[in-house]
Length: 155
Image 1 (cartoon, rainbow, N blue to C red):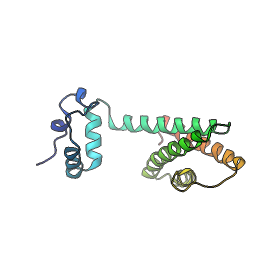
Image 2 (cartoon, one colour):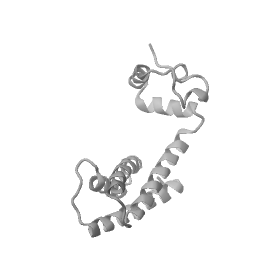
Image 3 (spheres, rainbow, N blue to C red):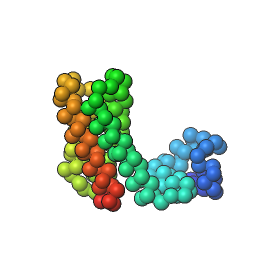
Image 4 (spheres, rainbow, N blue to C red):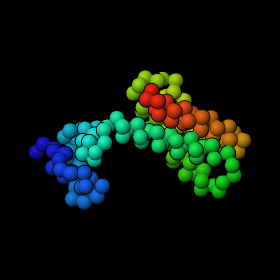
């Protein structure tokens, strides 16, 4: 049976936020039938926004939050903040890395890959506080650059 986004998500956008009647099996079937990208873009189109505008919004939000958190990480915080920072920076870094790689911005992609490796929560680096402070500022500047490039439509 072919996948029909309108059938699964409903004809209007009021069904999208709740997704109350969509089972995970239907979503998996739709993802395998049409491809995950077409499922995601179909749901976004139903939800009322253009695909490019939504991608730019998510990238801008992720990069902005990561930059702000990295700049704030120079101050003394409880250890839980730094653990949460690793998750945020890794997620924002992967999203930004995908956008940079897609547009063939290789140097930016390489820098973001380095940040993702440094901040990954699975295999944490054992650096001193001063070294982390330098890495936090460099990471904050990198994500501020990503945010600015995305805001201007270059990324």
